[in-house]
Structure formats: C-alpha cells, structure tokens
View (cartoon, rainbow over the protein chains, first blue to last red):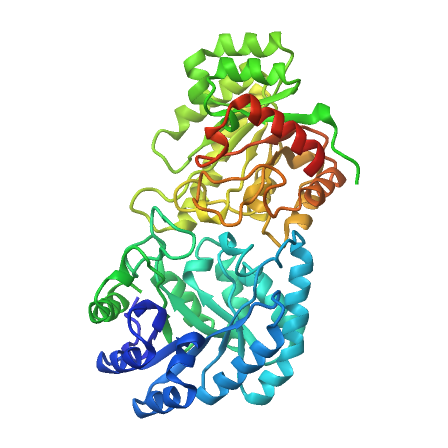
Length: 269
Length: 269
C-alpha cells in the first residue's frame, strides 16, 4: 500500500520528554510536523495562554490533549472540567480519556466499569457544550489495575454507544494490536467514533509494563495493515507518534528522535 | 459465599520451582493436596514411568500436563504427539496448550491465529483417540508476541466451537481477570469446555511481564467472584495454584509456600 500522507504526521510530546513544552512546539514546527498532542502538566508549566498562542503562531493542529479521565479518583469532576476548558482553549481535536483503574483497596472491577461510564455521562454535556470531543483510550490489559479498566476497543465502543454523541475512541496500536477483534471493532467505530490514531511499536522482549515502547518498525506490530483498517473505516485525521521509552528514546537527542519519527512514519507505517 | 472444597486444591509444580518433580510429588502429598499439575521438562528428568508410578502411589490426580502447543514453531507436530502420549500415560485431566506467538520475523498475527487453529485441528484426532482433552489456555495479551497469540476466552472458545469435541479451555485468572466479557464467556464455556481452573493473583505494581505473579489474596483479583462464575457454569474440577514468582515465592522454602497456598485457598478464593 502507499505511504501515509506526510501532512498527517503528529507528535505526542511525551516522545520528546527531555524537552519542555515550548521546546517541543518549536521542535515539531522546525521538523515540519503539523500536529501536536500535549500533556496537561507541561501545559501548566508554560501557561495555557502562552501555549495556545505559540501553537497558533506555528500553525499547528492540536490532535489531542492528554488527559482527562481517572474517574475512579476522588477529584475527578473538577479535574475533568478543567481539562475540557483547556482542550477548548487549545482547539484540541479531542480530550483523551485515560479512564482510571481500580480505586485504592478495591477489587471490584465491575463497579469501576460502572463508575467510569456514569462519570463520562456526567461530564459529557459540558464537553459537548465546549465543542470538545471526548476520546476513550482503551489501554493495554496489563494496565487495567492502575491506569484504565477499559482495555478493549469493543468495551470502549459499548460505552460510546450507550452515551450517544460527542464521544469516541483513541486507537493506540500499542494497546490494541493483539486483539483478534481489532479489525471488526475499528469498522464498527467508523468515522464518527474514531477520534485519534496513535502509533509506535511493540518491543520483543518488552522490559517494562509502562515505559518500554518501540519506534515504528522496531517491533512486531503490522502498522500498514492497521492503518489500512483505520482509513477504510473513514478516519482521515492525524497519525500521532506516542512513545514512552525510559530505556531508549527518552535518552536520545530529541532532534534525532523527531527525524527518526518522520523517516519511520514514511517507511514503516 | 462459602469457602472452596479443600479436596479440590491442586498445585502446579512451577509454584515450588526449587523442588524437582520427585520432591514436588512428595511435598504435595505430605501437605494433603490431592491434585498436581506438572511440566514436561521436569517429567523428562524423573522419567515418565517413575513419575506416573509415584503419582499413582500417592493417589494424586494429575490436573494437567504443561504443556503442548507452540504451534508456530517448526517441530510442533512431533512435540505435541509426545505430549499427548505423556498426558495419556499420566492420566492427566487435560493437556494444557500454550499456543505460541508470532513466528520469528513475522508480524502477521492473523496468519498465526490460523496456524494455531489448523494445527490443533490436525492433532485433535490423536488426542481424542488417547482420551486426552486439549485445553487452550488464553494467555495475557502482554504475552501475545512471544508465548500465545490467543489472549481471550472468547477467541479460545471460538476455536473450540469450530473444532468440536475433545477440546476446551484452561481458565487462569491471571491471564483473564481484566476481561469485561469474562463472566459471559465462562458461562458460554460451560461444563463441557471448562477443563481447568488456575488461580494466583495480580500484583500491583507488576514488575515483570512473565514471572511476577502474586499469592492469592495479595493482589487485586476478586477470586471468590470468579470462582462463583466458574462453579455456576458447571465446573466441578480442581483449583490449581500456579505462581511464577522470581522475586518472591520462588525464593522461599517450598514447604512454607505450600502451607501458604492451603491457607490462602481457604480464606481468599
């Protein structure tokens, strides 16, 4: 199949963790990357207005704000309200929801599922009003206890279908590549529910449950195939590189990382 | 709910890795545990006939032989034939299939799925003839690339339903606890397909993708709830403790480990 459109490459700034947000915005623009996804802690450091004006000055699209969610924590309401406001201010294509795992001391996964669904239902009207689509990101099942108890695209789409408009999914290949129902659930999601597409690769062996993702092409995920499914389902948005890599990419010069992202995006995805 | 039946406790010998098979058989019997599940490398050390006679002399039930499978390797045919013969000789309740991951150099997960299904179909007549039920064990998705590309109970049962009699599943809570469809798929499996039930716990945080399982009660899995589902589905076989634990339980005195297994089985499962 043909190479992906260079204009659709985006960078999640966690990939260049050594840079602060101002450096990341400049770097992304300098490398000719047109989309950026950012994290709220770094946004707070730079200041929302500074960030928004810098992003606008460089003509970048904010493909996602990371993150809302963690609905099984105590302060989830206020935190998600602020996240929606920030996403609105930045004109983000979506607010990425990492839904949260089991509450401390709980083993009741089914109650956590319910709490996630109820909480999203509660904030959804505010998100709709602000024009901020909410994107549930199913995380890998190995992160179910601590980060997100929604771990398949099917489960995420069941929640979306129950809640109606203004909500969809972020498909991150790292989290869902193993799923035998991946293709059918991407088809089910369709243009309406596919709000973000995140790429990286699965390293063999994987040495850490959180921060050992690989660069595209260095792992076992068939990225062109998954891209073909996402595109066939009607997705025409950005392809966002998101690499957590304590042992490798976070140690390197961020300019080298961005150059590699561009090269691998063109050749391996 | 009521405590589980003490007569249904079984031990997978990997849990007492410091013991050889002769020691493990003696130890299990000494602690009054009635079921044992063993590994073929240790069986080869002791010798099949020695093992079978020792297990028989102690009146133990072999709840499973670990393992057949690895259908994406080159020598899978001969290896699985030998495994079926050994399981037959031991009177094992099932031969546990760890189906194998991606072949070296491959990213074609869907071809691997097909290869697994075709291979099981090929060996199934021999297993039926030997009276050895084959138990597909879906492994945790984090082990998809290297050990097993069947990672949900639903996928395993789809294969079973396509292949007919003489095949079912091994439900290991460690691998499947996170699955939102766990209950419905256990119900679907029913008495016919539920061939083994493995217990341990999911540690938070988990420090290794393979060898960091927790003792029952030390993690976040709601073991009594999952047991209630398995029992409601008609399963009346053994509950087999299987703990891979490089950093903790493998370091301890195996007699302490077995005493702890008995205590936690009664109190936490």
